[in-house]
Length: 288
Image 1 (cartoon, rainbow, N blue to C red):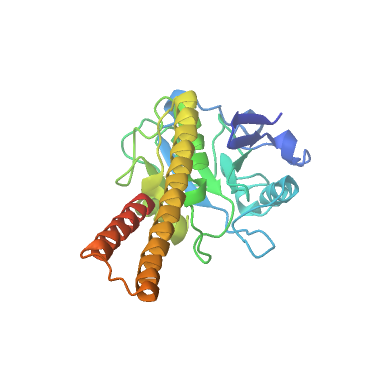
Image 2 (image 1 turned 45 degrees about the vertical axis):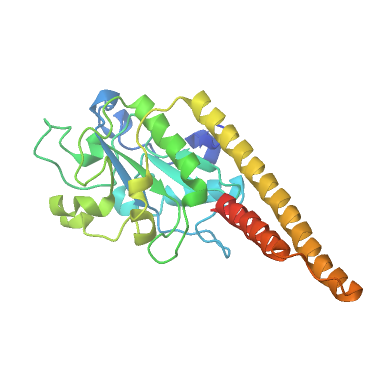
């Protein structure tokens, strides 16, 4: 059943997106594998699906129907890996800057996403498909540029959820950060010698924060940030109005002096111009 994990993250189960029941679930008891204890999940791995949305915004999804259709496609698109979604989760960037995360293999099953094994963990947890949690971003982030900045709050909400669910996730890593891309695992298997998760996603991995957050504090921070932005915009507008008034006064001084034949008092225009410049500088500083 779907669950609103945070205001920005909606989670859909396999039943929600309509997994085809004719295909047995993989990575668990039905396929002869034990479920994975959650404290054994130590790698956080990012992929991309390569499959794109069929409109101009190829990496951004507009409707839940599009999301569900892509998930049903992912269930059978890699039959060489079995008739199941190979990733633990698939994350969709939605047009309203939220994300929908769909259950693939899910929280407790082995995946078929990252080949190879490390030399640090005991069998079977040395295999990345067992000890790793793979979230695949829906889209092609190699061939199509995508600015992820508007979605970072929602994406980091998802990482916070994973950090709260898997106590040791990110404790082992094969890259400089706690969240690594599929291609970072290439030295462990030639099957990982790939562009995945795509250059435009890979360069933003450093912005992903894998830690549990105080959701209430995060929400309050966002509200405060919006209030400050509104106050700044209002102050800018006020300064702009004052600046315009000063400019008009300066023009009136010149016009009146010219019409009346009375000279402008020494230094008056210079003082008005100086005030005008200070108002403009204050407005520019608020805009920075």
